[in-house]
Image 1 (cartoon, rainbow, N blue to C red):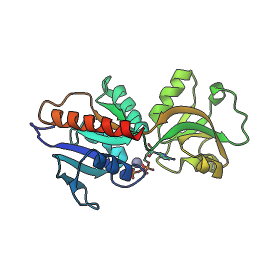
Image 2: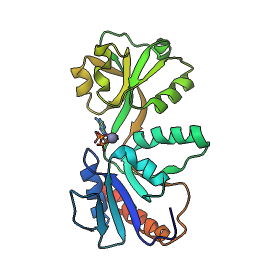
Image 3: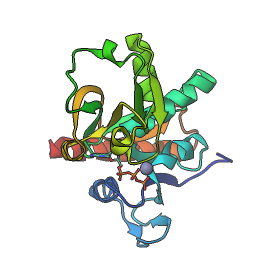
Image 4: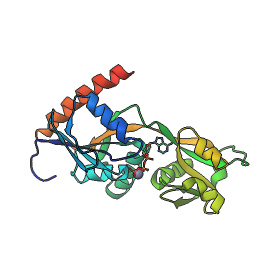
Length: 226
Ligand code: ATP
Ligand code: ZN
């Protein structure tokens, strides 16, 4: 960022699965904003904590660039971009501050229903479609398996039918989408949920105390929800 700042800026998803629960959680922490549901920016009223409404994929980068101070994002997205950053700079720039208890899902390998699944060695030489190439490649490396990673930004679940890949690595919650595409989950790579993300480096101005205040309130709210 540039210069000392006395307001905290939190990035949340503008629309999608995490948008409403993120807002509701921050409201439970006593935050309120001058309302602007359709706009990008919400000005904090009860505390100097503002919201930026963005696409979830942009949240880690906004924290990295100091445009936002904190963000609510799926662990899957944070981890994917963290691996990319670490490949580049060998150190993380953002970290998970708290798990938030909503947006639960898992990143899993799913294969055509006819496959008989035994173990990861079966993946050698196969093509795997995913929107999470970094997490998948890191996992494959850990397994010592060489497979092809086919990066797709959406509609991953139809890739086997289209002949683009032999199997997929995708987010699963109920499994209904997989079943509708004659796929079955066989292996979980990561368990995910929405998390509060922040920078590795500490704030050196008034934002530090604001972030601590927010975390104290958040811990109180999360404890009560359990
Ligand atoms: P955006 O427009 O912000 O890019 P998106 O389409 O990428 O939105 P959503 O589908 O709203 O994102 O999902 C946001 C997050 O919700 C995911 O990254 C994941 O952490 C979580 N999630 C929970 N269950 C599921 C699921 N069944 N499928 C996909 N994401 C899920
Ligand atoms: Zn997205």
